[in-house]
Length: 127
Image (cartoon, rainbow, N blue to C red; front, side, top):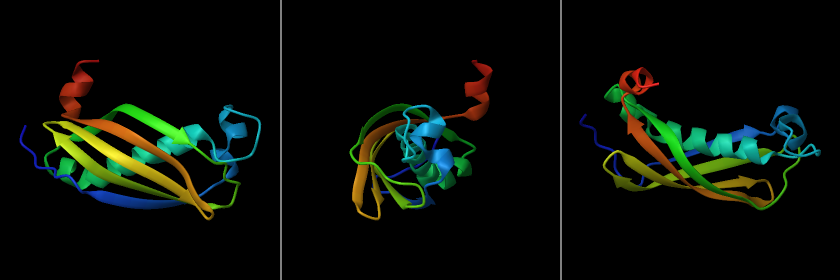
């Protein structure tokens, strides 16, 4: 498996918070504010998408293996979220990202996230 992914790859995604993104909807709380599970999913998706063009070129994919998250402020429904991921370390097939999330008032969360490059067919055959 030969591929070339370099540090510094970044991606920014935007999302409007809907009722389906709330703590009340996810069951992680009782309020209609942007849920931590929704933020984590957006963080992983942004990191995955940032390298997907490169991995797909080699018929590879990535899977999340670790995430360390801080959700520091609540965001109401209908506010727009901006998620920015940056690839900060490449060690063989192991990828590390720093991710920040903002709403209209400023930073609401941050994380470090690890993904691992896999061959999808071999990965699924092992399950």
